[in-house]
Each structure stands twice: as C-alpha cells, then as structure tokens.
Length: 274
Image (cartoon, rainbow, N blue to C red):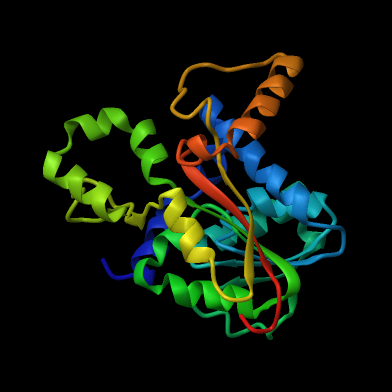
C-alpha cells in the first residue's frame, strides 16, 4: 500500500480527543504510557530543543514541558494540532511550545539541518508512511544535531495481533497470512478498518534503523506482562510501582520485544555522515 498523507490526516482528524484518552483505557495502555514516559525521561534534558512529530493532542508535549524542554509541535492532522493548542492553554504547557506546524514527517523542510537536540515520533508516524519510511528517517536525522536522539515508537505486529486476537479469530485466514507476511494493515487485508499502517517485527525495526552514522541505543516493547489485559486495574501505589519495575525489565528482554502493541527505540546520531 502506498503512503496516503491525506487519508492519514483525515483518520486522525476524526479520532479527535480519543488520541489523548487511549492511554487510559486498560492496564496495558497505562503501562505503555509509562514506558514511553521513561524513554523521554532517560534521554531528554532541560532546555533541550525537541521536535515532536505526530504530536497529536499533546499527551507527550505536556510531558516534555515537565522535563524542561522547548518543543516545536508538528502533526499531519489539523484537528490534532488544534487540540494540542487547546491542551497547551488549558493545562499550562504553552510556555514550552515554540510553534505549531501542520506538516508531514517526510518533509521537514521548514527546519534547518542540525537544529534540534532531539526528535520525538511517538504513536507510530513511521508506521503510517509505508514505502516512504527511509525518507522520513532521513528527514528526522537531518534536523537532529550530532549526538542528539531520535525517540520513536511504531506499531508491533505480534503484540497488536495478540491484543486484538478476538478480531483476528474472525478474519479470513488469507488476510491474516498476508498481514503476517507483510506487516501491512490495508483496505485489502481488513476492509472493515480505516486504520492503515505497517506493523513491525523487532528485528525489522532494528535493521531499518541501522544506518551509517546512527546507533540504536535502546529497543524495547511498550508493555510485556500486561499486553491484552483489558479489565484489570491496579490502584495501590506500591503495586503499581512494582508492576512498572517488572515491566521495565521484561520489555527489554529479547524474548519479549515483540510482546507490546508498540516497539520503542532510541537512536543516536553519531556524525554528520548520516
């Protein structure tokens, strides 16, 4: 399937605020938010200038504000940018946002080379660009200073199939075989869905990110022990802290990398050669 920027923008326009709420629905979603947050906390420093691509309504923009960074917000969806602005004003993180841009991750032309300390692309921008993913990666690296980090997450093939195993059970076997072989969720493989994306295996993502001048410093799952846990919630703080401790260890285990709905990566730009 070819990348269709207009269709992706329309899809996220229609999702509206549910993009903010999706991290609160299940225990696994809450763990995923915590693992994404931990990646930001590990690599983002105060006063870092961060480009957040595919920023959505601002869930991670607010976290970047809390880490003391300066953020340039970008999204393909006009509606998501509008919601991000509203959240920034209403929740008090507008002071950390330099600007909002409606743009495509495959064309970061408004920004100079090496102008950001970090690029954040959470939620799957690299899953939506299909055959243009090399272009998207090159653009993110171009605007990143040497020594800076690209922090990204993409949809995971096996973790997604595991979470949605009830829907998988009812789909034609030929369609599932195609999805497993290609990683692509398209109108042909699932005519009932408008969510078209490429879902990665961990080995595929690592290979994709291994470019000259880049180092993959971290690869992990967004959740491991709690993927697909829909109805269980933990309210006791000590139990929550313990669960996150166990998840943090499990998510980087090679055998668990494909377990989460998303794969997370931290990639360092080593030199101007990339």
